[in-house]
Length: 158
Length: 244
Image (cartoon, rainbow over all chains, first blue to last red):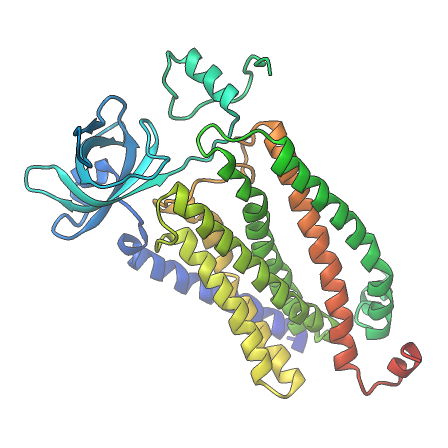
């Protein structure tokens, strides 16, 4: 091997070694890297239900229940396979909406209700002007679908 | 095959001269594109249906984050070329990348935090995407610190090149963090196989900004590369010719 080939081997070797080490480390810490667990993972017993953890999913439409005169509220987090009811007392972020992503931090009670002390909104990757959003909502009976298709929409008069 | 062009790339006076000639060809389009994209993004583009006017921070946040990752790729590639072909100019390119990359990473982190508070409800969470981007920032700082800590130029070049190559492992982690794990960060809107999840009047200023930032990086890299070459070659006789 010429010195240059030896150096190429060294660079490739470093990359391969570090990638392998990274892969093993990330695999070992997978549960810790996971920012939240979805309702199916909770149902399958993968979530650490004896500790505090984050529950993430979509807010099921029609399940948001606010108590008049207080900050107490409850709603259902769903991944469209399993549901978990969440109770929370406090102010929710502006982007907290039905059919939008949400991440709740708290504990799962023995009655299967998740008691959250922190609610974060999760935004999806779709951006659109209000008129387009209105057109999509009208097309779907007044509700924003989970993955709106912004293609081939009728032009809105602006 | 004729390799003269490749060997001439290793010649500091040659690169110094070319870099000086090329700089305005990147700097002017960069300035014009960024001004036009700012007008398009902050004035012409419609507000988002959910985030309202706040979504406009995207026009600085997303291009900065892309540049942060792209510059790391340029830096690590240059470092590898310098290591394998013993090319001093390549090491100078890598050294010139680090500061710019660190700044773009810092801008992406700060704008992301400012956006995160009103939208997610928090400035910072230890989410895979956010953490990987913070590690990128620390890698840049570590690279610069390692260079600054070794007096011998050749040793500093080689040691920092190895660190830059080791850090490459973080790049796919940043890109795929939102797909491999549950993350609070949204999936890519533009950099994906499918069509962009954004109408054209929002997308056009974003792409212009990305191109503008890239050209800005190219221009600033050339300026910094010239300074780095001057510093390295300060005892060489051609410098006296150039600076006469």
